[in-house]
Image (tube, rainbow, N blue to C red; front, side, top):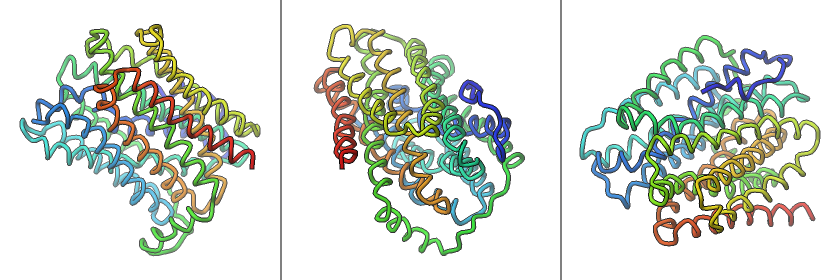
Length: 398
């Protein structure tokens, strides 16, 4: 993983180039935990005793766990010292990954619990991003967040090919054991380099959680942006869960070849820094319109014979990733600007809705593909962001 691809901006006051690079790398490495299983569920499920129909639960439960972690752990970033909180969650992630990698044959139900815990404990990334927004000056906030989001996107996109390659040569258990080792390195990096930040907000945990509803009611921009990105991310997860099935079934690609295919999606990583610069320059609305228009058009390409070729599917992935990440960064900047003292909770609400959308997309993928083929995936994948576009246009007109 090379986060320097996503961090090419000069240092900004309050946030050095080295720290931005570190945060980008850590975000990418941590978020990768919830994507390793996606392309290799076909290998995991029979080995741990899960049926083909239940294999998709591995991905869905990981994303549901992530959504639960976003809702119940990330708000603590507005209450507890941030560095200690992130280290504690990373320790839990390392343990969960190790347990998954050493699970025995026929332990399908237990493995599903580990998948839930992996997702739940991999939310430190959503504490790092608000911390970066807190440290960065206002005029550079979009750029800094965009650069760090570029590292996160590389983690998402490289996790799948890395998992496929490792599983193809060393078995699927090596993926999880290796990820646990990487988490140990991340723990050391976080503990030794992150600045301490003690939030000014004082409240009980119950009061903190109750304030989530207050924030959700108070800010319509938060509700709108959460809806847009949930629909966009549902299409993203639908595509990336279904496309390995299509590549294996219709194009007879091996796990290693599917891994190489997944690398093309990394081209979409350029969207995050670009979106940050556009937001800083005041072009957030136009960038959102572009992103929400591009996503359905990209998916509709799969209805043609050319769009169903390996090259066509790859182009769809690049365009979809570009659109989803651009809209995500624009939304984050707008949400973070609502209330600086509540960024942890605002981010928790925003990202929880997004990953619930992603869990729905992943859960639907195998069933839709089995019943309707890639055309069904393309239509559903186009319809989800199209709904976001329609709502965005209605809200903009008002």
